[in-house]
Image (cartoon, rainbow, N blue to C red):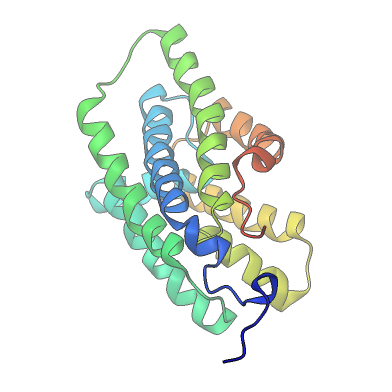
Length: 212
């Protein structure tokens, strides 16, 4: 029987498959942390993150929980992926469901706060931990979130820059959410300015290498 030299034997054990358990743990840890940080902004009452202005406004108008709105909006955005030809992954579907559930659960156990220093601390912790959460779930390469996929799909289809497309989307959702009663404040501005640089710094540390 002819044998291949050991060094040339093809391997079916792909590095990405071996690291799947670690990737799943990091994915769900990131999504849970993301939902918690959203609740920190809500309880601080100094403004919520851009997409949550829309979620909060819809929640107040419809009389349903904010987490329910997050899930519903996520699923609607996934429908918009169809004409954009974006492909969801397990991370995409998990993002659409887990974040909203964790948001509602955290709001149920985290009471409103009146102390201004504590509210400011909530915002600062929210910005930093949200950046960690974002880098964590993006870094496992299991599919973008529904909102991120909308942005990348529009960039590819329109040929516009990431900066212009993302800014246009977020300005639109903030304005719509504010008109519906969502909270816009200093925390919203701080998040918008700080999240990009923070995620850029954290991504190399959180990204899972899938090749040898």
